Image (tube, rainbow, N blue to C red):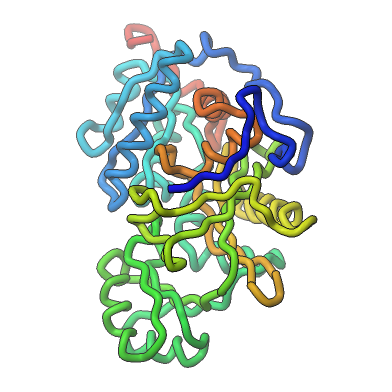
Length: 356
């Protein structure tokens, strides 16, 4: 993996851009580290991304502990979430990826328990996990995304190829990390591509392939304080940015500053920020964008509401370019932990006789 970050030890270089949508990165929120209480870092889980989640969670746990946070690992696939309240946890850092962690299910459970959590709420998490619903909302808001068709059979996948053109992307509508994704160029490949995607989700998405630069842009903050961080241009071997090249390969290049033409990155940051708000996201997220090689038009692919925090992950990489260390990023995200209904916070506080 080659990372062209070009930073000095003191902070971002002149090439690294400050977050869009506001001023320079501000100090962490109003909640001090000593007031964060007992924190559960939710990691592992039961999704197809369990392995990556464990790596993310381990990194987050060490970072929080290094800053004096009373943080502990908690794997929802091994322990019942009700134990969070019984054991006196007052905040959760969600380092779960994919289903049962990024899709609104865990968020809903934490709402019932009254325990504030990092990232988006129930509705935004659920919608963002569903690529079809995400596209429908983005289009309604006038935001650009590749043409698509959802299919339920190999035959429909062949029809989609004729409508969308070759090459075409076939993927599960509600999975992440390119799991179950295929790039097809002729009808002979459609049946296998559909079978692979349908293994992970009965709802399969066929999407127009955009040839050009691939970039990703994180967003940090909530509401009017949300800011787009520097874009990262991704150059994977053979243009194949799959699961292996995302998390385990050292061959993928992550270029930051992105080197995009003047004004183009700012435009993409603005579109990403709008996509974040359109879905009602909060806390943080990361949007993936393709830039058409001919027209230079950007197209939103998807948005991740619980991005990776591993050694290969892109949000920490972008944050560093904005002068935010991994440890500071983790603390900031935890300070932004919230509930959809703030009245639930009172319900979640330990009562008499319960652990504090």
